[in-house]
Image 1 (tube, rainbow, N blue to C red):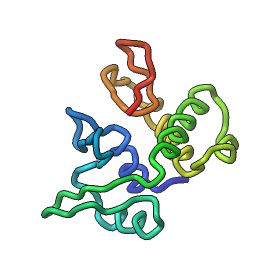
Image 2: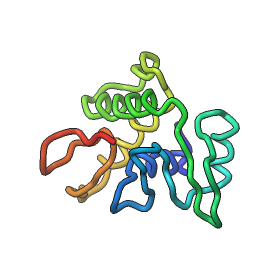
Image 3: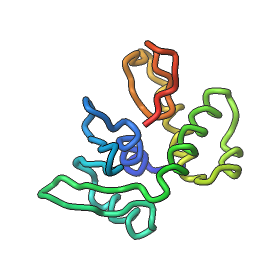
Length: 134
């Protein structure tokens, strides 16, 4: 099970966009926002993230092996939606990202009132019927 603070960090990256708390720059693939610095530092040490800049409380980071992270996160969401278990994580390039996506899907699915305007990588856009891609 992924801790709440860790899941919140990585989910905030997957929710990044123009109207989100975390911004994402398509050209540089950098994420900028106000993150839990202890969690960010831990994942920098583990090699999952790379620090680009700290300006006051704002932190700019990169996800190392971002393509693998994105595909595995989306696969976790897809398998959770299909009712499968986390054993499929072993078949992904990034089992951690798979688990974060899997657990995030279940957290969102538990809400009594789903947010129809919710935007997150790997989730279906209710307006278009397409899966949101970052």
